[in-house]
Length: 308
Image (cartoon, rainbow, N blue to C red; front, side, top):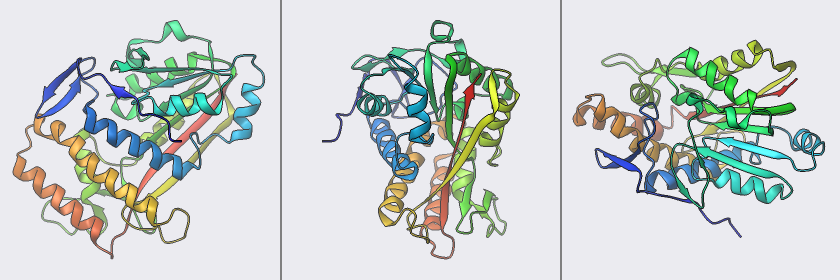
């Protein structure tokens, strides 16, 4: 039986161009309303298919860490709908699982903001899971500080795993595609990359995963020899070509991509982008996705390491 979905409270949301936004942080540009809950749960199941489980860290490595504790503890920073927490609690019934997010939820999780510090959680957890959080934090110094706060929550020997989308979509040959440009030849560029780059106000280059790995390497609390990474090339609207994922994954990814475009619209409108321009970008992105000559991957990067 599939676990029940965690429903977010809408009482703490503010309206932004027809979508419900959280009131805790101006940096988090995505809605926190019911349509976004549906998208996040779809995204969770998509990533679960790609990773063949809830976590990119190999199961035997996690088991070895948890076996050292009478009551293992898991912290999910940016827990979204809570579905990852629920499934980890079911997989590890002996563990204490804590989820932290900007928005209240039912059942209750802990409300908090990684950028404001996590001192009450220091040295308490064997696994700290950070999914699609760092990408929303503005500025390299703030990103690095947030990663340091997350690492500080680990017990010695515990594992931090940070997962995010790379900012660029990739071609069928797995080459990263920079944002498309107006009135230019965009055969080696992407309108999907452009759409998200405009929403986030960034370059659209595949830098978040590289930056995260550098932060782990530079943190004195992390065992450098333990650092690992993996990339998951998730096909958008096709089967990926090599049988790794198949058509079902491609269809899920297509639905998630279209929902992500809707999620980004309040941010684009708030930046002053005319609706006509947004519609044009979206039309070109959809044409790109449907073009059999230009198959796309959306790439998930996962980096993990162990605390000394």
